Amino acid sequence: MDNFDVFLWVAFPWLAIAAFVIGIIWRWRTDQFGWTTHSSQIYESKLLRLSSPLFHWGIVFVIIGHLMGLAIPKSWTQAVGISDATYHLIATYPGTLAGIAALLGLAGLIYRRVVNRTVFLATSRSDKVMYLLLGAALVSGFFATVTLQLFGSAHGYDYRETISPWLRQLLVFQAQPALMTDVPWQFKVHVIAGFTIIAVWPFTRLVHAFSAPVGYVTRPYVVYRSRDTRTGPVKEHVAWEPVRSHTEQLDERNQTPSRGA
Image (cartoon, rainbow, N blue to C red):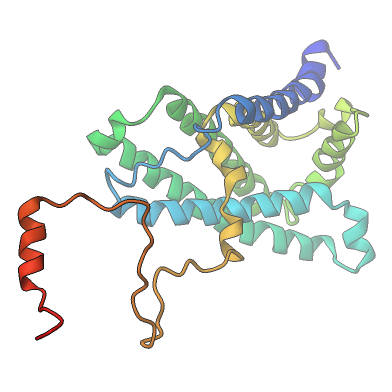
């Protein structure tokens, strides 16, 4: 194994993870007002209503599938009686559907930004880089799944014997780059694209993924007015009242009936 392979499968992933962690901390400390999706819904909402949920739900299930395949060792699934054929069926077909949803949603979001001039003018340079790298990660992963898992061998390529242990060892600082030597090039491209998007994540609008409004689920309702019909208006106590003119005071005095009447 030459130095370039060591860089690709040891140094580059570590650098990407370091850029991710340091970038997130730096962004939070210096740019909390920019920690947002930079929503463009005000410019166009029809395509956004279709593409955004499709992309976000698709990517959620794609990430769940990656976590299950990379974090759970093969020996664990075999210990509970899940055969390789069953695991391949569970992982491949739902993962393919999730990938299709994410790709269609991303294509709709990109189409919206290109076609709608107002949205295009609101697209920053970092947004363009983010869409390019995110598209590369999704397309490379989908291509690897289709060519190797769907139309490859009977059980597809068993990445749980190479990529999964390589990643787990990498995260505990016991890198074994030799595990990536015989990995098909489709998965190698996808791994590199994935770590690239991780490296630039803090410097794009993708940081909004860490600001999901989870608290809205449990927050109390905001009561603006009571539904009780017996509740009357409450007089507000103000510290000052506007000064009325002399004419207004005379008119009010004339309209007030005398007590002896």
